[in-house]
Length: 193
Image 1 (tube, rainbow, N blue to C red):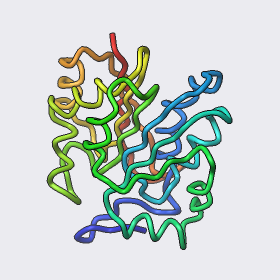
Image 2: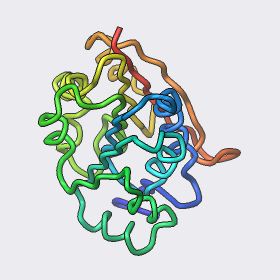
Image 3: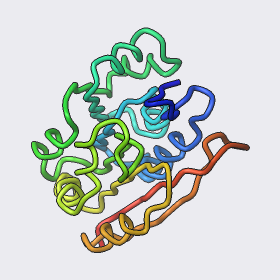
Image 4: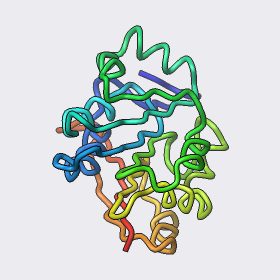
């Protein structure tokens, strides 16, 4: 479990929402040759593990994590740690905004789970990804017909309106933390109109 100021961010017992985030974003890429996916935020590795189960053998998954300790923990302890050794994975220790900025038109899908959502909890600079300029940055990194998926601890109508304002069609999905119990989280699945 990872906690910040006593608030649970993620757990090895409750990762259903991370699994669903990958499924809703990557399932459509199953038959896409050379699919490229960016995952912003390694967390405990469950989103990555789920994405790899869905993507073709020639896919590339760029995983961006800003916190070195999270990378090290995954390598040593995570039940999903072996996913980092998959030849389709490129692990980048950096701020996801830097990677988005450097990769215009590079990704079929972008999955952002870098914090608690638009209300940044772990790092105040993460909030910029949920503002209009951050949404545009992610949008510019998409290929034609690409999708951007955001994980959030709560519903956020303001953020949803910003996604629409960026010219994106948005599906809002409420998902439990565990498949059968626990609180609900919100997934925003956005695509270019």
